[in-house]
Length: 218
Image (cartoon, rainbow, N blue to C red; front, side):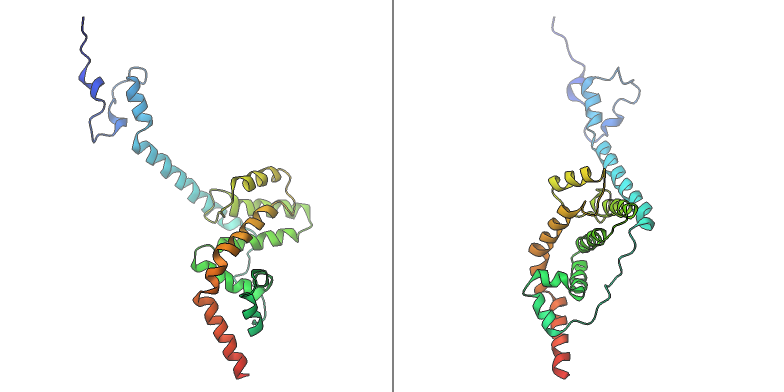
């Protein structure tokens, strides 16, 4: 004998209606399998999960704002660069990064590109490598991880999975060199990606013009 299926089992939930509200009066076991699957894949459920993750990220950021590393100054203490130094920065990224004034100007440029965290991470790693006290190393390593490695941080730097996995292993027993691979990767990223744009930026050109003018006047 031919059985006629109930229309709702054939059509599924009515178009335009949230799938989570299709079976409000039925228990979980009474719902047909497609309804339970539809509820799990419901767009509003996925949106709620996405919103929850962003709320978690924001809460983590707010909670960690007051427990960061010892504040890195807005500007490293340094003398005004000479014309020769500023011109030298265009010849070598290493020269730029070894010069405090160069790092300050480059950091100012990175801020305009919303990638200042790369320089901040690099500086934090340099600070960690100069630390000898075990307790201080543990604390600073944890802070660097929370500030720049954690996916919950708004200042998370871009690292590949191999480097991230290595950091996670090393964080079980942090040392002053826990982030060496990550620091090198970010250094390379700044060199290849940001540095060429910096040399063509208004920030660098204005400084070069300023120091050249000062040099000629003196």
